[in-house]
Length: 326
Ligand code: SF4
Ligand code: SF4
Image 1 (cartoon, rainbow, N blue to C red):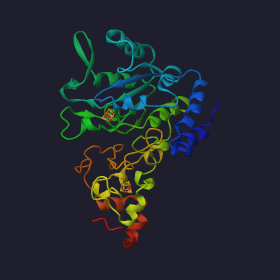
Image 2 (cartoon, rainbow, N blue to C red):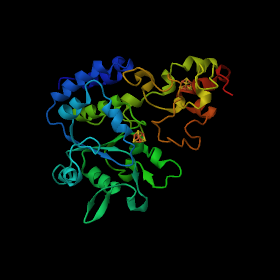
Image 3 (cartoon, rainbow, N blue to C red):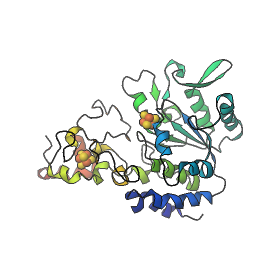
Image 4 (tube, rainbow, N blue to C red):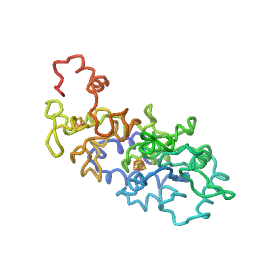
C-alpha cells in the first residue's frame, strides 16, 4: 500500500481539503487506488431520487469523473449513465446476485417507498410484475459486501420522507437494519465526501463513523464552529433580511445543529458555500431534514437547543457572555 491510512485521512480531511484544494489530494488517492488491485465492483442503485446526488458526484473535477468511473471504481450499474438499458442492464444485477455475493459494494441513492407494497418505485419486471425498489434493495443489500447510502434520502429518508410522506419512504437502514452500511448524507452530498468515502472503503475498509453512520473525517464538526459569520453571531450582529451582512441565525440558519465540513471545504473547489453566498444552512446532512421536528427548512432554531449542545455548555454556564438572540 503506497498511501498509509493516516496520510490518506490527513489528505482528505486536512489542510488541502480545508482550502478546497481537492486537486492536491485526489490525484494521490487515485494513484493509490490504481495501485490497489482487485477493487470490488460497485452497483449504484437509484430509489426515490432526484438524481442530484449522482450529479454532485459527477462534478468531481480532479480527477475527471471518467477516470474515476473507468479506472478506479469498477462501476457496473448506474441507471443514469450506463450505456445499456432494459433487460440487458438488469442482467448486471442478476449476475451480481448470483455470482458476486459478498463481493460488490452497493451504493444507494434515494429513499425506498414501502406503502402500496413498494409500488411507488419500480425497476424492471419479473413474470409480468414490476420489481419494486424495496425488493431490489433488500436483495442487493443482503448480498453486498457493504452499502453506501449516498445522500440524505438514502441515509435518513430525506425529502421523500418529509411530512406527510404518502409513499412511506424510508431510509435504507430502516429496510436493512443489520447490514454493514455507511451514510453519506447531504442534499446533495459534497463529491469529495462520496469519492473520499468510496476510496476509504476500497483501500482500507469501513471508516470511523458517528452514531448516524457518517464518516467522521467529513462529518465531525458543526458548521457553526467554522462559519465565517461566527464573529457576527458572537457580537449579536444578526442579518434581518437576505443579502444583509451578519450572522444568518434569524433567517433560520441551522448551522448550530448541522454536522459536516462544508464551511471549511466549500463547494466547487472551495469557491463558495451556502452561508457565504447568503443562503442559511438548512442542515441537509441531519436525520431531521427537511421537517426538522416541525420547524421546517427556515424555522428559527430554539435558542435553548443551541445552549444544550456540548460545545456551548461553557457559555451556557456563563449566561452573561451569551449574545442576545431575540
Ligand atoms: S439527497 Fe437531495 S440531491 Fe440526493 S437524491 Fe435526495 S433530494 Fe436529490
Ligand atoms: S448561526 Fe449560521 S450564519 Fe450564524 S455563525 Fe452559526 S452557522 Fe454561521
